[in-house]
Image 1 (cartoon, one colour):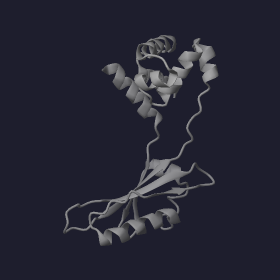
Image 2: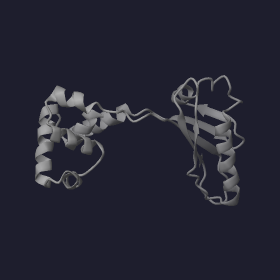
Image 3: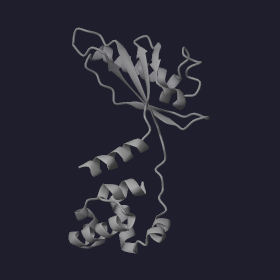
Image 4: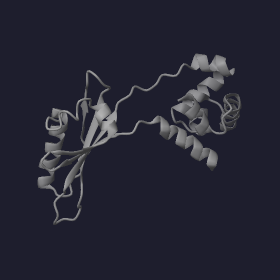
Length: 185
């Protein structure tokens, strides 16, 4: 169990933390964390001049909630910066959820949009002496396929898939299937 937790911790460490903005219901910014300031450079100086994409999202959320007090908005927008990576922006109410009380604040989550890292499987194959079939299996593991799905896709039995996975784990010196993903990604 400790090994799995260590692997999950490594995966989580690689994720970037979201930027968080808290607004009152008048679209006044009350709080921003460090990540938000990194994602939207100049936000601190332009505290009363928030990006138009965020302002529109806040207004859209408030207009929908007037019609339905239990409204949850799954919409998002994208902010494209010249100086930083683009980010996805989502907004939702925080505060009271009881019918007779109004929401007190709006939280905005800013998440960097990063391109999926392309793996150089030729380099991995050579560096760790993986066979062509082991590389195929490793790619499919990284795509999230189960052993059964990998077997069906490669026209091999599930036991053969398991043997390939054991060989990959041994060659990469990782203790599990999740370890393969964490190592390669």
